[in-house]
Length: 263
Image (cartoon, rainbow, N blue to C red; front, side, top):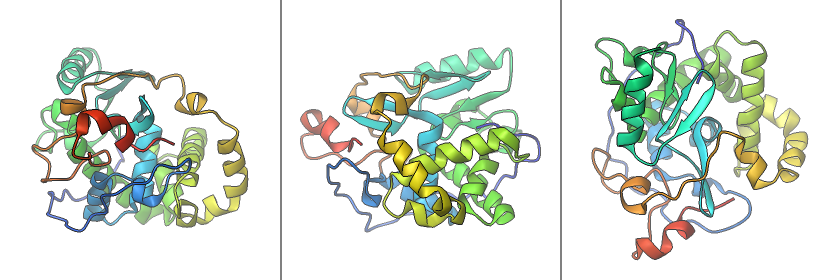
C-alpha cells in the first residue's frame, strides 16, 4: 500500500464475536463469494465495507501460491517497491526491524499498511510496535477502516481501492484499480460493487481468463511450503474459530491444501 500524510485512519473497532459464518467451501475453477475466508467477513463487517473488496485488496497486496491455493500472505513486507515474503511471523518481524533502521517507508502485513503514512503506526496508535501490524486480523481491520474512509470521499468501492493505494490519484491509483478490478471479477457478485467495474467487466474477465495462474501471481509472489499448523491458522489473539483461510476439516494435515480453495 502506497500512501501519504493525508491518509485517513478510520475508527479502530475491536474484534467482536460474529456467529453464523459460512464455513463450507466448494472446489471450483471460479472463486465464489463463500470462498472468501471468514476473517475477511469479520474485518469488513467491523467497518461496514464489502468483504469482496477487502479480499481483492489483500490479494492485490500480498497474494502468494500455497501449494494448490492462492491466498494473501500475512508475513509480507514491501520496501522500495520490492516485496519480501517470509515463512513465519518471527522472520517477518526480524526483517521489519532491520528495514526500519534505514527507512520507515515499509508496507507491512496482509493488506500492506505503510509504517510512515498510516497513523496506526504512530505514537498512541494500535501498531506502536510495528510488528503488531503483522497480525493478520488487526491488519485487515485497519485496512478496512482506511477503505471505508476513502469510500466516503470516492463514493465507489473500486475508486476507494485506488485511493487506498494512493489518495492523490494519478497513474499509480489507476493501475491499482485495474488490479483490484481483476481480483473482484473472479468473485461472485464482485462486479456489482462498482459502476466503474461494471463498465469494464467484459474486458477484465477476458483478460483474467487468458492469464495463467503463474502469471497472475506476478513476479513478487513467491511459492513457499509453510508448516500448516502455525502458518495457516491463527487462534490467538484472534476470535475463536475465525481464520484467515478456509477453516480446516477434521484432519488438517491431510486436507490443508484442499481446504484453501484454489482458483
